[in-house]
Image 1: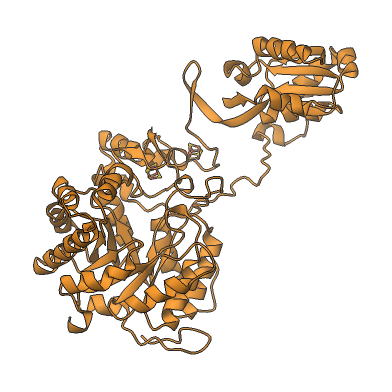
Image 2 (image 1 turned 90 degrees about the horizontal axis):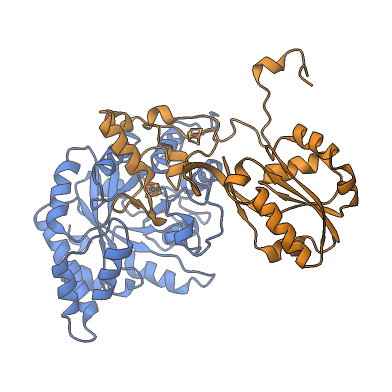
Length: 311
Length: 224
Ligand code: SF4
Ligand code: SF4
Protein backbone atom coordinates (compact mmCIF):
# COMPACT_ATOMS: atom_id res chain seq x y z
CA UNK A 1 0.00 0.00 0.00
CA UNK A 2 2.38 2.68 -1.18
CA UNK A 3 0.89 6.06 -1.69
CA UNK A 4 2.15 9.48 -2.64
CA UNK A 5 2.47 11.15 0.69
CA UNK A 6 2.81 14.83 -0.03
CA UNK A 7 2.75 17.50 -2.68
CA UNK A 8 6.41 16.94 -3.42
CA UNK A 9 5.62 13.41 -4.39
CA UNK A 10 7.71 11.68 -1.72
CA UNK A 11 6.63 8.09 -1.46
CA UNK A 12 6.25 6.40 1.87
CA UNK A 13 7.80 2.99 1.54
CA UNK A 14 7.68 2.05 5.22
CA UNK A 15 5.33 -0.81 6.00
CA UNK A 16 2.06 0.37 7.51
CA UNK A 17 0.87 -0.50 11.00
CA UNK A 18 -1.71 -2.75 9.38
CA UNK A 19 0.91 -4.63 7.39
CA UNK A 20 3.11 -5.11 10.44
CA UNK A 21 0.35 -6.30 12.73
CA UNK A 22 -1.36 -8.50 10.18
CA UNK A 23 1.99 -10.14 9.41
CA UNK A 24 2.20 -11.03 13.10
CA UNK A 25 5.25 -8.84 13.67
CA UNK A 26 5.69 -7.30 17.13
CA UNK A 27 4.71 -3.65 16.59
CA UNK A 28 6.94 -1.04 18.19
CA UNK A 29 5.73 2.53 18.18
CA UNK A 30 6.88 5.74 19.75
CA UNK A 31 5.23 9.06 20.27
CA UNK A 32 5.81 12.60 19.09
CA UNK A 33 4.38 15.39 21.21
CA UNK A 34 4.17 18.49 19.01
CA UNK A 35 5.60 21.66 20.59
CA UNK A 36 3.80 24.69 21.92
CA UNK A 37 4.72 27.23 19.31
CA UNK A 38 6.19 27.50 15.86
CA UNK A 39 9.70 26.27 16.65
CA UNK A 40 9.59 22.68 15.42
CA UNK A 41 13.31 22.00 15.26
CA UNK A 42 13.46 19.81 18.35
CA UNK A 43 10.38 17.87 17.26
CA UNK A 44 11.97 17.18 13.87
CA UNK A 45 15.08 16.00 15.68
CA UNK A 46 12.91 13.55 17.63
CA UNK A 47 11.29 12.35 14.42
CA UNK A 48 14.71 11.69 12.92
CA UNK A 49 15.82 9.98 16.10
CA UNK A 50 12.85 7.60 16.15
CA UNK A 51 11.85 7.03 12.54
CA UNK A 52 14.12 4.03 11.90
CA UNK A 53 14.08 2.42 15.33
CA UNK A 54 10.29 2.24 15.76
CA UNK A 55 7.73 1.13 13.18
CA UNK A 56 5.47 4.12 13.67
CA UNK A 57 5.02 7.29 15.68
CA UNK A 58 1.82 8.44 17.34
CA UNK A 59 1.19 12.13 17.07
CA UNK A 60 -0.81 13.53 19.93
CA UNK A 61 -3.68 15.92 19.19
CA UNK A 62 -3.55 18.86 21.61
CA UNK A 63 -2.78 16.29 24.29
CA UNK A 64 -4.24 16.88 27.75
CA UNK A 65 -6.21 19.75 26.20
CA UNK A 66 -3.04 21.80 25.91
CA UNK A 67 -2.84 23.79 22.66
CA UNK A 68 0.08 22.70 20.49
CA UNK A 69 1.37 22.41 16.95
CA UNK A 70 -1.23 20.45 14.95
CA UNK A 71 -1.11 16.67 14.81
CA UNK A 72 -2.01 16.57 11.12
CA UNK A 73 0.88 18.85 10.17
CA UNK A 74 3.19 16.72 12.30
CA UNK A 75 2.01 13.59 10.49
CA UNK A 76 3.06 15.16 7.21
CA UNK A 77 6.44 16.13 8.64
CA UNK A 78 6.97 12.53 9.75
CA UNK A 79 6.12 11.30 6.26
CA UNK A 80 8.46 13.82 4.67
CA UNK A 81 11.22 12.56 6.94
CA UNK A 82 10.60 8.96 6.00
CA UNK A 83 8.76 7.83 9.12
CA UNK A 84 5.33 6.25 9.54
CA UNK A 85 2.76 8.41 11.37
CA UNK A 86 -0.12 7.22 13.45
CA UNK A 87 -2.48 10.16 13.54
CA UNK A 88 -4.35 10.67 16.79
CA UNK A 89 -7.71 12.33 16.25
CA UNK A 90 -9.77 13.61 19.15
CA UNK A 91 -13.32 14.96 19.14
CA UNK A 92 -12.78 17.78 21.61
CA UNK A 93 -11.82 20.59 19.26
CA UNK A 94 -13.59 19.83 15.97
CA UNK A 95 -17.13 19.05 14.97
CA UNK A 96 -17.96 16.23 12.57
CA UNK A 97 -17.48 18.42 9.51
CA UNK A 98 -14.01 19.54 10.52
CA UNK A 99 -12.97 15.99 11.40
CA UNK A 100 -14.23 14.71 8.05
CA UNK A 101 -12.27 17.28 6.07
CA UNK A 102 -9.15 16.64 8.17
CA UNK A 103 -9.48 12.94 7.41
CA UNK A 104 -9.82 13.63 3.69
CA UNK A 105 -6.66 15.70 3.87
CA UNK A 106 -4.84 13.02 5.87
CA UNK A 107 -5.87 10.31 3.43
CA UNK A 108 -4.73 12.16 0.34
CA UNK A 109 -1.37 12.87 1.95
CA UNK A 110 -0.60 9.30 2.83
CA UNK A 111 -1.67 8.95 6.44
CA UNK A 112 -2.75 5.34 6.80
CA UNK A 113 -3.53 4.78 10.44
CA UNK A 114 -5.76 6.87 12.64
CA UNK A 115 -6.14 6.45 16.38
CA UNK A 116 -9.65 7.49 17.37
CA UNK A 117 -10.09 9.16 20.76
CA UNK A 118 -12.78 11.14 22.48
CA UNK A 119 -10.15 13.47 23.91
CA UNK A 120 -9.50 14.91 27.34
CA UNK A 121 -11.91 17.43 28.74
CA UNK A 122 -11.20 21.11 28.22
CA UNK A 123 -10.86 22.12 31.91
CA UNK A 124 -7.87 19.80 32.48
CA UNK A 125 -5.84 21.77 29.93
CA UNK A 126 -4.49 25.26 29.36
CA UNK A 127 -7.48 26.83 27.59
CA UNK A 128 -9.91 26.41 30.44
CA UNK A 129 -12.46 28.86 29.06
CA UNK A 130 -12.63 27.31 25.62
CA UNK A 131 -15.85 25.77 24.34
CA UNK A 132 -15.55 22.00 24.08
CA UNK A 133 -17.04 20.41 21.01
CA UNK A 134 -17.59 16.66 21.48
CA UNK A 135 -20.02 16.63 18.57
CA UNK A 136 -18.80 13.02 18.26
CA UNK A 137 -16.91 10.66 20.57
CA UNK A 138 -14.52 7.79 19.97
CA UNK A 139 -17.07 5.13 19.02
CA UNK A 140 -18.87 7.50 16.67
CA UNK A 141 -15.53 8.58 15.20
CA UNK A 142 -14.72 4.96 14.39
CA UNK A 143 -18.09 4.69 12.73
CA UNK A 144 -17.45 7.89 10.83
CA UNK A 145 -14.32 6.33 9.34
CA UNK A 146 -16.35 3.32 8.27
CA UNK A 147 -18.89 5.65 6.64
CA UNK A 148 -16.16 7.51 4.79
CA UNK A 149 -14.63 4.22 3.71
CA UNK A 150 -17.97 3.47 2.10
CA UNK A 151 -17.66 6.73 0.18
CA UNK A 152 -20.14 8.75 2.22
CA UNK A 153 -20.04 11.54 4.77
CA UNK A 154 -22.03 11.92 7.96
CA UNK A 155 -24.42 14.35 6.35
CA UNK A 156 -25.64 11.40 4.31
CA UNK A 157 -23.97 12.61 1.14
CA UNK A 158 -21.92 10.64 -1.32
CA UNK A 159 -18.31 11.79 -1.64
CA UNK A 160 -16.44 11.58 -4.95
CA UNK A 161 -14.63 8.52 -3.67
CA UNK A 162 -13.91 6.49 -0.56
CA UNK A 163 -11.00 6.80 1.86
CA UNK A 164 -9.11 3.94 3.45
CA UNK A 165 -7.59 3.89 6.91
CA UNK A 166 -6.47 1.41 9.53
CA UNK A 167 -8.54 2.68 12.47
CA UNK A 168 -7.33 2.14 16.00
CA UNK A 169 -8.57 3.03 19.45
CA UNK A 170 -7.49 3.00 23.07
CA UNK A 171 -8.56 1.01 26.09
CA UNK A 172 -7.83 1.49 29.78
CA UNK A 173 -7.11 -1.85 31.49
CA UNK A 174 -6.90 -0.16 34.92
CA UNK A 175 -10.22 1.68 34.63
CA UNK A 176 -12.30 1.68 37.76
CA UNK A 177 -14.92 0.25 37.45
CA UNK A 178 -13.64 -2.02 34.64
CA UNK A 179 -16.87 -3.63 33.39
CA UNK A 180 -18.31 -0.56 31.60
CA UNK A 181 -14.85 0.04 30.10
CA UNK A 182 -14.92 -3.48 28.66
CA UNK A 183 -18.37 -2.87 27.20
CA UNK A 184 -16.98 0.19 25.51
CA UNK A 185 -13.99 -1.79 24.25
CA UNK A 186 -16.43 -4.19 22.64
CA UNK A 187 -18.35 -1.32 21.07
CA UNK A 188 -15.14 0.07 19.63
CA UNK A 189 -14.35 -3.31 18.10
CA UNK A 190 -17.81 -3.44 16.57
CA UNK A 191 -17.47 0.13 15.32
CA UNK A 192 -14.42 -0.91 13.33
CA UNK A 193 -11.35 -0.53 15.56
CA UNK A 194 -8.77 -2.93 14.18
CA UNK A 195 -6.11 -2.44 16.81
CA UNK A 196 -5.81 -0.96 20.27
CA UNK A 197 -3.21 0.82 22.32
CA UNK A 198 -3.66 0.72 26.08
CA UNK A 199 -3.42 3.54 28.54
CA UNK A 200 -0.12 3.30 30.47
CA UNK A 201 0.19 -0.04 32.24
CA UNK A 202 2.63 -1.00 34.99
CA UNK A 203 0.99 -3.89 36.79
CA UNK A 204 1.94 -6.73 34.47
CA UNK A 205 -0.02 -9.44 36.24
CA UNK A 206 -3.17 -7.34 36.00
CA UNK A 207 -2.40 -6.64 32.37
CA UNK A 208 -1.95 -10.33 31.63
CA UNK A 209 -5.38 -10.96 33.12
CA UNK A 210 -6.90 -8.15 31.08
CA UNK A 211 -5.35 -9.56 27.92
CA UNK A 212 -7.04 -12.91 28.47
CA UNK A 213 -10.36 -11.10 27.95
CA UNK A 214 -9.08 -8.85 25.17
CA UNK A 215 -7.68 -11.79 23.19
CA UNK A 216 -11.21 -13.04 22.69
CA UNK A 217 -11.78 -10.24 20.20
CA UNK A 218 -10.51 -10.17 16.62
CA UNK A 219 -8.21 -7.20 17.21
CA UNK A 220 -4.53 -6.56 17.81
CA UNK A 221 -3.38 -4.87 20.97
CA UNK A 222 -0.31 -2.86 21.89
CA UNK A 223 0.68 -2.35 25.51
CA UNK A 224 1.09 1.33 26.32
CA UNK A 225 4.21 2.07 28.37
CA UNK A 226 5.06 5.40 29.93
CA UNK A 227 8.64 5.98 31.06
CA UNK A 228 8.98 6.65 34.79
CA UNK A 229 11.49 9.38 35.56
CA UNK A 230 11.07 9.61 39.33
CA UNK A 231 9.19 8.09 42.25
CA UNK A 232 7.38 11.41 42.56
CA UNK A 233 6.04 11.09 39.03
CA UNK A 234 4.73 7.60 39.79
CA UNK A 235 2.96 8.83 42.90
CA UNK A 236 1.61 11.82 41.03
CA UNK A 237 0.14 9.60 38.33
CA UNK A 238 -1.45 7.29 40.88
CA UNK A 239 -3.13 10.26 42.45
CA UNK A 240 -4.00 12.36 39.44
CA UNK A 241 -4.14 10.32 36.26
CA UNK A 242 -7.32 8.25 36.04
CA UNK A 243 -6.76 4.72 34.80
CA UNK A 244 -3.06 4.65 35.66
CA UNK A 245 -1.79 2.56 38.53
CA UNK A 246 1.88 2.17 39.44
CA UNK A 247 2.35 -0.67 41.96
CA UNK A 248 4.28 0.03 45.17
CA UNK A 249 7.24 -2.18 44.30
CA UNK A 250 7.96 -0.06 41.21
CA UNK A 251 7.63 3.14 43.23
CA UNK A 252 10.08 1.70 45.76
CA UNK A 253 12.45 0.69 42.99
CA UNK A 254 12.36 4.24 41.60
CA UNK A 255 12.80 5.73 45.08
CA UNK A 256 15.80 3.57 45.86
CA UNK A 257 17.66 4.71 42.75
CA UNK A 258 20.94 6.49 43.47
CA UNK A 259 20.87 10.26 43.20
CA UNK A 260 20.75 11.26 39.53
CA UNK A 261 20.05 7.69 38.46
CA UNK A 262 16.25 7.66 38.58
CA UNK A 263 15.97 7.94 34.81
CA UNK A 264 18.27 4.92 34.43
CA UNK A 265 15.99 2.96 36.73
CA UNK A 266 12.97 4.07 34.71
CA UNK A 267 14.64 2.85 31.55
CA UNK A 268 15.52 -0.44 33.22
CA UNK A 269 11.92 -0.93 34.35
CA UNK A 270 10.51 -0.26 30.91
CA UNK A 271 13.06 -2.52 29.22
CA UNK A 272 12.09 -5.26 31.67
CA UNK A 273 8.40 -4.72 30.91
CA UNK A 274 9.02 -4.94 27.17
CA UNK A 275 11.00 -8.15 27.59
CA UNK A 276 8.28 -9.75 29.65
CA UNK A 277 5.58 -8.74 27.17
CA UNK A 278 7.55 -10.35 24.36
CA UNK A 279 8.62 -13.44 26.25
CA UNK A 280 5.13 -14.20 27.51
CA UNK A 281 3.49 -12.99 24.31
CA UNK A 282 1.26 -10.73 26.38
CA UNK A 283 0.52 -8.28 23.56
CA UNK A 284 1.02 -7.71 19.84
CA UNK A 285 3.36 -4.82 20.39
CA UNK A 286 4.36 -1.97 22.64
CA UNK A 287 3.70 1.71 22.42
CA UNK A 288 6.48 3.66 24.10
CA UNK A 289 5.67 7.04 25.60
CA UNK A 290 8.83 8.74 26.78
CA UNK A 291 7.06 12.05 27.36
CA UNK A 292 9.78 14.71 27.10
CA UNK A 293 12.58 12.12 27.22
CA UNK A 294 12.56 10.99 23.60
CA UNK A 295 16.35 11.02 23.61
CA UNK A 296 16.47 7.84 25.68
CA UNK A 297 14.17 5.75 23.48
CA UNK A 298 17.15 4.22 21.63
CA UNK A 299 18.57 3.17 25.02
CA UNK A 300 15.26 1.65 26.14
CA UNK A 301 15.08 -0.43 22.96
CA UNK A 302 18.70 -1.48 23.32
CA UNK A 303 18.25 -2.59 26.92
CA UNK A 304 15.08 -4.40 25.92
CA UNK A 305 17.04 -6.07 23.10
CA UNK A 306 14.37 -4.93 20.72
CA UNK A 307 15.63 -4.18 17.22
CA UNK A 308 12.85 -3.77 14.68
CA UNK A 309 15.12 -4.71 11.79
CA UNK A 310 15.55 -8.11 13.40
CA UNK A 311 11.90 -8.93 14.12
CA UNK B 1 -36.16 25.23 37.53
CA UNK B 2 -33.65 27.80 36.33
CA UNK B 3 -30.68 28.21 38.65
CA UNK B 4 -29.29 31.70 39.11
CA UNK B 5 -26.54 33.28 41.14
CA UNK B 6 -26.28 36.94 42.12
CA UNK B 7 -23.59 39.00 40.44
CA UNK B 8 -21.31 40.80 42.91
CA UNK B 9 -22.97 44.02 44.03
CA UNK B 10 -20.10 46.12 42.61
CA UNK B 11 -20.83 44.68 39.18
CA UNK B 12 -24.50 45.55 39.51
CA UNK B 13 -23.57 49.04 40.62
CA UNK B 14 -21.29 49.39 37.61
CA UNK B 15 -24.14 48.35 35.30
CA UNK B 16 -26.29 51.09 36.78
CA UNK B 17 -23.66 53.82 36.51
CA UNK B 18 -25.81 56.07 34.31
CA UNK B 19 -29.01 55.65 36.32
CA UNK B 20 -30.01 57.92 39.18
CA UNK B 21 -33.32 56.20 39.72
CA UNK B 22 -33.90 52.43 39.42
CA UNK B 23 -36.99 50.19 39.27
CA UNK B 24 -36.48 46.65 40.59
CA UNK B 25 -38.15 43.51 39.23
CA UNK B 26 -38.00 40.20 41.10
CA UNK B 27 -39.28 36.73 40.27
CA UNK B 28 -41.58 34.80 42.58
CA UNK B 29 -40.60 31.43 41.16
CA UNK B 30 -37.10 30.11 40.42
CA UNK B 31 -35.21 33.25 41.49
CA UNK B 32 -37.07 33.26 44.81
CA UNK B 33 -36.00 29.66 45.46
CA UNK B 34 -32.42 30.54 44.50
CA UNK B 35 -32.56 33.57 46.82
CA UNK B 36 -31.56 35.81 43.94
CA UNK B 37 -34.83 37.61 43.17
CA UNK B 38 -37.41 37.07 45.92
CA UNK B 39 -39.02 39.74 48.11
CA UNK B 40 -36.10 39.59 50.58
CA UNK B 41 -33.41 40.05 47.96
CA UNK B 42 -35.31 42.87 46.25
CA UNK B 43 -35.53 44.65 49.59
CA UNK B 44 -31.89 44.01 50.34
CA UNK B 45 -30.62 45.31 47.02
CA UNK B 46 -32.93 48.34 47.29
CA UNK B 47 -31.28 49.25 50.59
CA UNK B 48 -27.82 48.76 49.18
CA UNK B 49 -28.59 50.89 46.14
CA UNK B 50 -30.00 53.63 48.32
CA UNK B 51 -26.94 53.61 50.52
CA UNK B 52 -24.95 54.16 47.32
CA UNK B 53 -27.03 57.25 46.58
CA UNK B 54 -29.44 55.73 44.06
CA UNK B 55 -33.15 56.34 44.21
CA UNK B 56 -35.32 53.25 44.08
CA UNK B 57 -38.38 54.37 42.17
CA UNK B 58 -40.33 51.22 42.97
CA UNK B 59 -40.31 47.45 42.73
CA UNK B 60 -42.43 44.44 41.87
CA UNK B 61 -41.92 40.69 42.30
CA UNK B 62 -43.56 39.00 39.32
CA UNK B 63 -45.28 35.70 39.99
CA UNK B 64 -43.13 34.11 37.28
CA UNK B 65 -40.29 36.22 35.96
CA UNK B 66 -40.29 34.88 32.42
CA UNK B 67 -44.01 35.39 31.75
CA UNK B 68 -44.09 38.28 29.31
CA UNK B 69 -47.85 38.78 29.37
CA UNK B 70 -47.90 38.90 33.17
CA UNK B 71 -45.02 41.33 33.21
CA UNK B 72 -46.91 43.59 30.86
CA UNK B 73 -50.02 43.49 33.05
CA UNK B 74 -48.07 44.06 36.29
CA UNK B 75 -46.18 46.96 34.79
CA UNK B 76 -49.46 48.79 34.11
CA UNK B 77 -49.94 49.04 37.85
CA UNK B 78 -46.47 50.62 38.30
CA UNK B 79 -46.73 53.09 35.45
CA UNK B 80 -45.61 56.19 37.33
CA UNK B 81 -42.75 54.53 39.15
CA UNK B 82 -41.51 53.07 35.87
CA UNK B 83 -41.79 56.44 34.18
CA UNK B 84 -39.62 57.95 36.88
CA UNK B 85 -36.92 55.27 36.65
CA UNK B 86 -33.82 55.69 34.46
CA UNK B 87 -33.23 51.94 34.43
CA UNK B 88 -34.81 48.62 35.39
CA UNK B 89 -32.77 46.07 37.33
CA UNK B 90 -34.16 42.56 36.82
CA UNK B 91 -33.48 40.03 39.58
CA UNK B 92 -34.47 36.94 37.65
CA UNK B 93 -32.84 34.64 35.09
CA UNK B 94 -31.74 35.80 31.65
CA UNK B 95 -35.15 34.84 30.30
CA UNK B 96 -36.88 36.95 32.94
CA UNK B 97 -34.62 39.89 32.18
CA UNK B 98 -35.61 39.64 28.54
CA UNK B 99 -39.27 39.34 29.42
CA UNK B 100 -38.92 42.79 30.95
CA UNK B 101 -36.97 43.90 27.89
CA UNK B 102 -39.93 42.85 25.74
CA UNK B 103 -42.45 44.93 27.67
CA UNK B 104 -40.51 48.11 28.47
CA UNK B 105 -38.46 50.62 26.52
CA UNK B 106 -36.29 51.59 29.49
CA UNK B 107 -32.66 50.42 29.80
CA UNK B 108 -32.81 46.95 31.39
CA UNK B 109 -29.98 45.33 33.39
CA UNK B 110 -29.51 41.88 35.00
CA UNK B 111 -28.53 41.40 38.63
CA UNK B 112 -27.98 37.65 38.22
CA UNK B 113 -25.97 35.13 36.26
CA UNK B 114 -28.06 32.28 34.89
CA UNK B 115 -26.43 28.88 35.38
CA UNK B 116 -28.51 25.89 34.32
CA UNK B 117 -31.79 24.04 34.40
CA UNK B 118 -31.55 22.36 37.78
CA UNK B 119 -33.25 19.81 39.94
CA UNK B 120 -33.83 20.63 43.59
CA UNK B 121 -31.97 18.08 45.69
CA UNK B 122 -32.99 19.85 48.88
CA UNK B 123 -33.53 23.49 49.66
CA UNK B 124 -30.62 25.48 48.20
CA UNK B 125 -28.94 22.48 46.57
CA UNK B 126 -29.40 22.19 42.83
CA UNK B 127 -28.03 19.85 40.21
CA UNK B 128 -28.14 19.88 36.43
CA UNK B 129 -29.72 16.77 34.99
CA UNK B 130 -31.06 17.83 31.59
CA UNK B 131 -29.57 20.01 28.87
CA UNK B 132 -32.77 20.32 26.86
CA UNK B 133 -31.35 18.54 23.82
CA UNK B 134 -34.65 18.12 22.03
CA UNK B 135 -34.37 14.38 21.46
CA UNK B 136 -34.56 12.56 24.76
CA UNK B 137 -32.70 9.25 25.00
CA UNK B 138 -33.35 8.51 28.66
CA UNK B 139 -35.26 5.39 27.59
CA UNK B 140 -31.94 3.72 26.75
CA UNK B 141 -29.85 4.93 29.65
CA UNK B 142 -31.75 3.97 32.77
CA UNK B 143 -33.22 7.48 32.99
CA UNK B 144 -29.80 9.00 33.65
CA UNK B 145 -28.81 11.52 31.00
CA UNK B 146 -25.40 11.03 29.35
CA UNK B 147 -25.69 14.30 27.43
CA UNK B 148 -25.76 16.18 30.73
CA UNK B 149 -24.25 13.98 33.40
CA UNK B 150 -21.25 12.88 31.39
CA UNK B 151 -19.03 15.95 31.17
CA UNK B 152 -18.22 15.21 27.52
CA UNK B 153 -21.75 14.20 26.60
CA UNK B 154 -20.50 10.82 25.39
CA UNK B 155 -23.29 8.59 24.10
CA UNK B 156 -21.55 5.22 23.93
CA UNK B 157 -20.07 4.51 27.34
CA UNK B 158 -17.44 5.86 29.72
CA UNK B 159 -14.19 7.49 28.68
CA UNK B 160 -10.87 6.46 30.18
CA UNK B 161 -11.11 9.29 32.68
CA UNK B 162 -13.44 7.53 35.08
CA UNK B 163 -11.72 7.24 38.41
CA UNK B 164 -13.33 5.29 41.14
CA UNK B 165 -16.70 6.14 39.65
CA UNK B 166 -15.88 9.85 39.63
CA UNK B 167 -15.39 12.11 36.62
CA UNK B 168 -11.98 13.25 35.44
CA UNK B 169 -12.99 16.90 35.49
CA UNK B 170 -14.12 16.98 39.07
CA UNK B 171 -13.54 14.30 41.72
CA UNK B 172 -16.65 15.58 43.52
CA UNK B 173 -18.88 14.64 40.60
CA UNK B 174 -20.05 11.16 39.77
CA UNK B 175 -19.12 9.78 36.38
CA UNK B 176 -22.45 9.78 34.54
CA UNK B 177 -21.58 6.60 32.69
CA UNK B 178 -20.73 4.74 35.87
CA UNK B 179 -24.17 5.74 37.17
CA UNK B 180 -25.84 4.57 33.96
CA UNK B 181 -23.97 1.27 34.08
CA UNK B 182 -24.93 0.68 37.71
CA UNK B 183 -28.57 1.52 37.04
CA UNK B 184 -28.83 -0.71 33.98
CA UNK B 185 -27.15 -3.48 35.93
CA UNK B 186 -29.79 -3.17 38.65
CA UNK B 187 -32.49 -3.43 36.01
CA UNK B 188 -30.80 -6.37 34.31
CA UNK B 189 -30.38 -4.27 31.15
CA UNK B 190 -26.58 -3.94 30.87
CA UNK B 191 -26.76 -5.54 27.42
CA UNK B 192 -28.49 -2.40 26.15
CA UNK B 193 -25.31 -0.46 26.77
CA UNK B 194 -23.76 -2.36 23.88
CA UNK B 195 -26.14 -0.82 21.38
CA UNK B 196 -24.46 1.75 19.19
CA UNK B 197 -25.78 5.30 19.59
CA UNK B 198 -25.20 7.37 16.44
CA UNK B 199 -24.16 11.01 16.60
CA UNK B 200 -26.90 13.21 17.94
CA UNK B 201 -28.87 15.75 15.97
CA UNK B 202 -27.92 18.95 17.76
CA UNK B 203 -30.37 20.97 15.70
CA UNK B 204 -33.69 19.37 16.64
CA UNK B 205 -34.76 22.88 17.55
CA UNK B 206 -33.22 25.67 15.53
CA UNK B 207 -31.82 28.33 17.79
CA UNK B 208 -33.47 30.42 19.06
CA UNK B 209 -36.16 27.92 19.92
CA UNK B 210 -39.79 28.67 19.26
CA UNK B 211 -42.69 26.34 19.89
CA UNK B 212 -46.48 26.50 19.81
CA UNK B 213 -48.43 23.67 21.42
CA UNK B 214 -50.53 21.75 18.90
CA UNK B 215 -53.88 22.87 20.33
CA UNK B 216 -52.86 26.47 19.68
CA UNK B 217 -51.42 25.95 16.24
CA UNK B 218 -54.65 26.03 14.25
CA UNK B 219 -57.03 28.95 14.37
CA UNK B 220 -54.25 31.32 15.40
CA UNK B 221 -54.20 33.40 18.54
CA UNK B 222 -57.33 32.19 20.30
CA UNK B 223 -56.53 32.95 23.90
CA UNK B 224 -55.73 36.61 24.27
S1 SF4 C 1 -31.43 13.23 26.61
FE1 SF4 C 1 -30.77 14.40 28.38
S2 SF4 C 1 -30.55 16.48 27.62
FE2 SF4 C 1 -31.79 15.40 26.14
S3 SF4 C 1 -33.88 15.83 26.78
FE3 SF4 C 1 -33.30 13.87 27.70
S4 SF4 C 1 -32.52 14.40 29.73
FE4 SF4 C 1 -32.58 16.29 28.54
S1 SF4 D 1 -15.35 10.38 33.52
FE1 SF4 D 1 -17.45 9.71 33.09
S2 SF4 D 1 -18.68 11.56 33.20
FE2 SF4 D 1 -16.56 12.22 33.09
S3 SF4 D 1 -16.23 12.58 30.89
FE3 SF4 D 1 -15.60 10.47 31.30
S4 SF4 D 1 -17.40 9.21 30.91
FE4 SF4 D 1 -18.08 11.33 31.05
